[in-house]
Image (tube, rainbow, N blue to C red; front, side, top):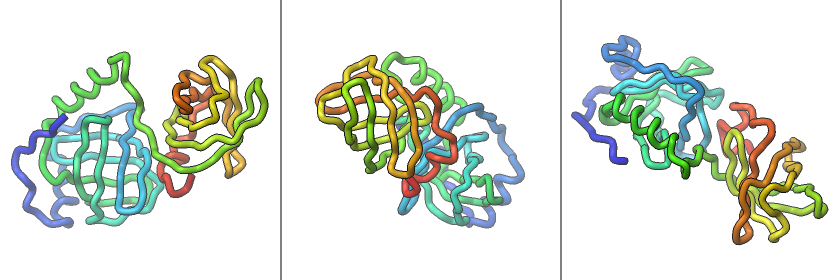
Length: 205
């Protein structure tokens, strides 16, 4: 989806923070929605707290700096470019490079989420894990993670419906069920979701 720009903002970083604080336009509060935030050297899933035509507020424990450029994906088809306008340690405000139609964007997100082929946003990773299943122990490559799932590359041993336990390199264990498996790749549905903070930074995984 292409985000329609109305008129590029022509104000500096300090003015952007003031603009966001004043909240001159309507803001839409969101519940349990995450955005994939890509920065110069990292990517992660951050909680989206509210959004307006000109900016949004995100919740994250990842350190950020005012003026830093971020690329924010609300879904695989909707990406918004912006800059950090302010931060207070656990939240930050983002000012968009160009205003969007916020109401239309949220409507599109709801429509996308209702489709049968909808996939939640994922964090791309390159790590390994030990996977235990009824056929024994296997080393798998973890390709991506979402709050409720993991994408893995394997040797062909996994079939849909199989239970598995993933032991990650950091010592964490996660139980799940194989949802699909094809051409050496598989999707694991986790029985317990990842904590939000775990997926905030791919560099920590």
